[in-house]
Image (tube, rainbow, N blue to C red):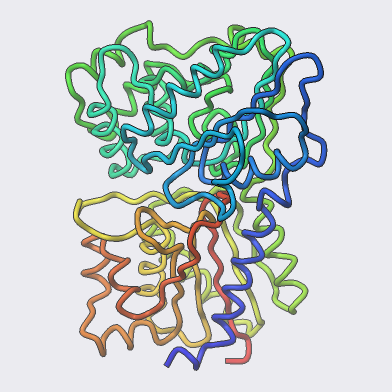
Length: 427
């Protein structure tokens, strides 16, 4: 039955592939990278794009004898393990684990060893907030894991989540730059946060923080996050305030965002225009609750379909999900799509895709999924209740049963959500 909409599916997948390719490390890394002519250049790559960014850096920089890659398990490029002198740590995500602690301690150790003639090149992408975990004094990894899990399930935005995490860490919020001391620091960033504030990408280990302990406490209170007594004390301790910008030694340093969701959307828009789609770009900063945004976009698509034009609606950002079933299997993009499908109600001529550009939506091994006009009828034939699956945070199980998941494996980049809705003007 899927063959009935084969052309629309191909176009949706092509839009996604085009968007991801536009923000790949090979495309966005600068041709000229820094070198340490007087001292040592130390590259540290952190995040889901870490191995791809490090690979490109090593191709373009001579004389690198050591470095560190910290990424999520399974997010190494196929040939990366053979690289001489580069340490690799695969750590926990989206919740930190013991390897996350090891990774943070190793990064801090390497940074502390740098001298005034040396240069730290930080290659940063999304995911580092969990991949690097150095709990402040008085709290444990278990405390960090519990707080992180509660924040992720609360519906808080990524900026709010990272504001709290930065004040419970010895490496986030600019502290890695402080550890590097007199060395120069260059930070190249593939941004996965709406608005592309570099201080929030992986909680900004080399970027000055603009949030405060007081704001972190307000966020915890706002979402009713349960805290251990030690975590509560840590958020009240002035010693855990993030360091001021003038302590980071930023005078000889540089921070550059080299890829963002806007770049992915621009590439998708160019692809669509070249194929005679009228493109509606809703922007790259959308952060609403996923299911409600999906319903809103369905309503927009139905309105735009009335003029009979062949259209594609694209958008990016990072939606939120409020988890009510801790055993549910879902993801932001899958909940968006299920909300969209329900609101479309089988509307003819409208198909949609929503995927995470890193290839993993939430904790499941799928980037996202596709919705077609027969999604609900096929679900009914299988006895699937879309509303029940959405209410129980089980959107993954819904789309898996239909065979409509998009499975890419890790893409080795990350600018967060990509969504596209195709309106077939010939319906």
